[in-house]
Structure formats: structure tokens, C-alpha cells
Image (cartoon, rainbow, N blue to C red):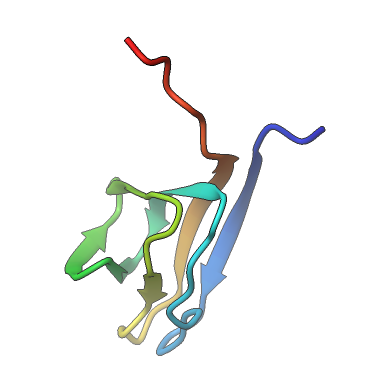
Length: 86
């Protein structure tokens, strides 16, 4: 069973995946190089090197590189965990 998946994502200038929703996984981001715009739910964030953020499961997210330079991110996708009831 895979507990989590980590990978680097390269976003060429003027690119990025479309708005999407993970139904069962939380997605964590860390900007390694460049800058990108994250939209998580209704919040837009200009993220530069060193920024980290979390997109919880069942929330619409997109990442866009609107610059003329390549951006690189470390992304980790992990199953949503149930918290103890206390």
C-alpha cells in the first residue's frame, strides 16, 4: 500500500495543470524554483521560492506559472487521515 507519493513538478513558462479536485488525498506543495500562482478554494496566492502550502482533499486547486521562467515544485500527495474523535 502506498502511504504517500512525492515528486518534483516542472512548470514551463505560461503553463500549469487546470483546476482539479482530489477526492481522497491532501496535496502539499513546496516551491523550489521560480514563482507560481496557487488557487486553493477561493484564495489565490503568489508563491515564491520557499513557500509551502496544503490543498485539502475535496477542495478545487490549480497551479499556474504566469512568468517567463520555469518553476519547479516539490509535491507530496497523501491519503486524507481521519483524526481521533478526541
